[in-house]
Image (cartoon, rainbow, N blue to C red; front, top):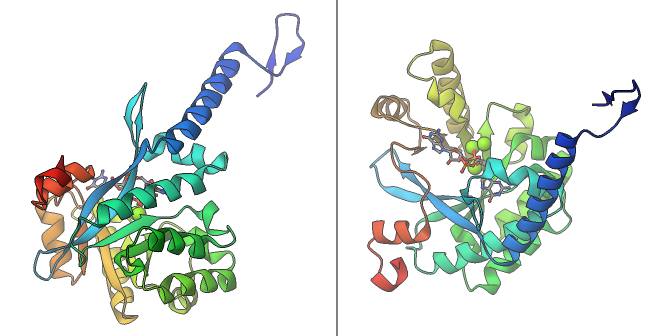
Length: 278
Ligand code: C2E
Ligand code: MG
Ligand code: MG
Ligand code: MG
């Protein structure tokens, strides 16, 4: 926004804008260095099966161990990574670290990796991620890809090709934050997602709002009728968990079951050998 200076002229920069620009540049540079040094780490949030309460895997969530600012959550750096072309390098670094962790995590537990819409258009996205996993000596079948509706609905033909490449490698594909974007039901069917994740905004209001409950009912029956699994995220209390269990929801994720944690914490939770947990 242009501001008027004291002489009535227009200046394009104010000192505070200058400072904000400087800070953004600094973060951009620090992110570049941080990614190279593996400061952006995979954290792991448990996903549980409703049928028997067992653990079925983890969602990989990025956390930046920033040397100056401490542990940062994605709202502080994912948009920056996306807009400065660093999201690819960040994802590769996280995936490589997750593969190293995966060697110590029981093989039946699936690890879900988030992909930004901006990244989804990259040529060779699926091939590159599969190559990274194989180079680390891990089976791609241990991984799930999470993408949002916006990423896939623009160019359905291209999306179909990318998802097919993932699936042919043994990976599964989940549609994240379902209900907040735009997707047509026929495209949903055509893309053959293995799983739908119900956005946490609906889950949070589930026990108080009849509207949310009806939406959640509709999403669960849609998923199940298409033969897809359905995960509810953002479950914070027993009341919501019980309700989703009764509704036939397949899997649950949320602070009620566990917060995102470092590999060290997860390793001690799983009682892995001490040298791994350290
Ligand atoms: P998402 O993929 O929908 O991940 C779920 C988010 O909900 C995570 O936030 C998780 O910590 C949070 N969450 C889970 N259960 C609860 C709960 O019971 N209560 C509350 N209040 N929150 C809960 P987080 O880790 O801050 O990540 C935010 C978003 O950033 C993710 O949303 C995802 O879109 C993006 N993201 C995270 N890691 C990556 C990554 O490695 N790559 C990319 N491209 N995006 C990422
Ligand atoms: Mg996700
Ligand atoms: Mg989500
Ligand atoms: Mg989200």
